[in-house]
Each structure stands twice: as structure tokens, then as C-alpha cells.
Picture 1 (cartoon, rainbow, N blue to C red):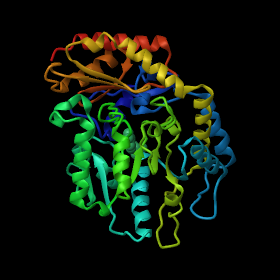
Picture 2: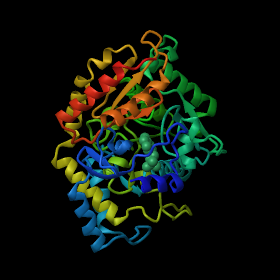
Picture 3: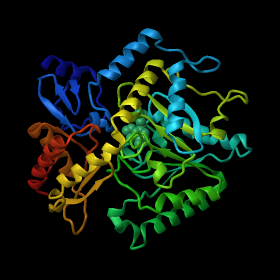
Picture 4: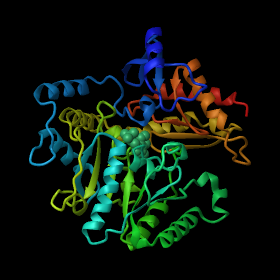
Length: 438
Ligand code: PMP
């Protein structure tokens, strides 16, 4: 273990590491909701492999077998033009089958950022093929997370994703997201009224006929698990529709059961023209993403008029076989419904934590929880040091893995979490938060 930790320090880049974090936790094995580090210490994974995935849990033999079978049959064959492979076809059909009405074309990618880039290109291409080549602007939201490539990173609303590495892409504009807990942002106005007025003003400033698309997470993840007011997406959708602007739902975190639905956008009145997905598509067992599109948008992606796009490993046969087996498991084990049950266990278990002086708000959306820490409940001023300290203590003292995003502790456990483990995690969290001094 010491040797691995040493090699890790010398060779492997950990891009989000902060100077204060020199320790290493080298994970070597997983089973269900637990993972083991190289010292043999067992942890309860309340974060989906510290990255919002692991829907079906760790170490599932069904997925290992799907990978082995496919790799020995046919590991890979591209679907750039006339060639295809059976698993990517079956996966595309399966995604279309699960999806909301009207979305039936699938562009496979290796992950979320590539999916976001693909959706942005598809939106601009759609407009330019219809004689509107100047419709290039992309609207996204501050604190929205969409990935780190130059396209997705231009849409992401966090300065630290761009710091020192600019210039990023032109013609990207950010608007305010719905953060209902921080109602002071809206100056006493109804949050949706405020946000719609701001969006309308932004469109007017750019020129609505210059805007290609807006992208947003149905429920913001990296911003701290923030569901919007019920009328937010329907009103955004209506406004964009009036101006011929496409709406892209970034469901990289939310899809495949995480929020208690196959696709979260469908039930929030978002009615997107494209859905970007990744993570839960394979539960993390293979790198894979997809963009599900309206027929007329997807059919525009051809080389006929000179445009070309596609990645070597998109539709990798083994990744697609794993995704198919993963979706089978999610379906067979009822994990979409179970996510809601998991959320209820977590909400119940955190009931007394919700009353603590430094806990501002606990937000539960399916099996996704944001615990926002504040200096005081009266001012709602963020308590930034708290979440990192609590996360470290939960891991090192209680062997419970959570994640901190700014002043929010995030949970996104495997959907197979059972009641006892939910209780163990929430007890530990409550105990640690009770001792926080701000
Ligand atoms: N969109 C969202 C909402 C995400 O959470 C992420 C990754 N955390 C991405 C896009 C980017 O995906 P990837 O890291 O696979 O490129």
C-alpha cells in the first residue's frame, strides 16, 4: 500500500487535489455499497464511487461477464459510416425506448464532456442547415457543471474550470440559476419571475435569433443538489420555444434512476430537444456517454454537406454490452423506484441533522442529497470550511465516503444501498455535523 501511495504521488495527476490534502486513499476492491483501500480498510460509499455513479453497486459479476463475453466476441468496430456493431445498435434502440416521446436518435460518446460538445455542435449545425448560420450563442447557468473540454468547459459556470487556461470559446453566456435557498439573490421577487426576466433580458441583449441553444441540468448536481421551482423549466421551455432556441438537458448525473426517474427532465416539464447522458449509463463499469436527439436534429449529423464529427471509441462494443447489462440490472432490480426509497431513508435519517445550527438546508432528490452548511441559519451565509472538514472526518473516523462541493456535503450512493447502511451513514453524518463549530 505504501508503495502504491508513493507511486501515486510521484506520477498520477490528481487535478482537484488541494494543497492541504496530501493523503491518498488507494481503492482496490468494491462490492455493493462498500469499497476497500489498499490497507484493507472498508468504506461505505455514499457517493457512487465519489462521482455520482455506481447505480448498481460495485463488483457486479453480471457486468464483468458482459464485458468478458463481448471482448472475446468482438471488442470494437466503428460506426462512423457504413459499419456498425450489434451492441451499439441495441443500446441506441434501448435508450430511445426509455426516452421521452420525440427523441429517438442517439450519438454515442465516451463520456459527458464529449456529449455536451456534441450537443452544442448538433444545435449549431441544426440551425445552420436551416439557413440560420448566425445562431451560435449558447446560454448556460452559473454554477452549472457540464464538463471540462473547451466546449463543455465554456458552458460550465465555475471560474476555476477556466482559470489560467483561456481563452475559452466565444458566444457563451451565463444566466443565474435557481437557488431557492438563497432567495436574497432574487431581491424579494418570486425566483422564477426573476430568472425568466433575466433570461429574457439576456436574449434581448444578444438577439434571440443569434441564440442556438440553452443547456442546463434538470437538477443541478455540482452546485450542491439543487432542484428548481416546479414552474422554472416549463417557463424556460416556453420562452425558448417562442424564439426557436433549442434546449439541451444535461442528465449526466440525473439519468438512469439517480433522481427516481429514468430521465429527470421528462417529469420536470423541460421537454428538451436533446439529452446528454453518461455516468449511470454504465454505472461506471465502462466509459460511455450518449446524446439523445430529436429526429430532425440527429438526422442533420451527416457528412453530406461537409460536416464531420465522431470519436474513435464512440459506441465501443464492450462499453455498449456493459451498458445493456447495466440497464437490465437497473430494470430487473427496480432501482429507479428504489432510488426514491433510498432518498426517504436518508431524509428520515437526517431529520435531526436538519435542525442543527450549521445545517442550512437538506435537499433530497431521489438518491441524491445536498446538505448545505451555513455560518448561521439566520444569515444563510455559507460555511465553507465545514463541508471539507466533515467529509474528511466521515471518511477517516467513520469510514463513510461523502463529497464536499463548496459549503455543501453531497451524497449520491449506489441505488442498491440498504436500510441499515443508510442508517449507519446518516447517524455518522449527524454525529459529525453536531460537533461542527463555525
Ligand atoms: N455534465 C454533468 C452534469 C456532470 O456532472 C459531468 C461530470 N461530473 C459532466 C457533464 C462531464 O462528464 P465527463 O466527466 O464524463 O466528461
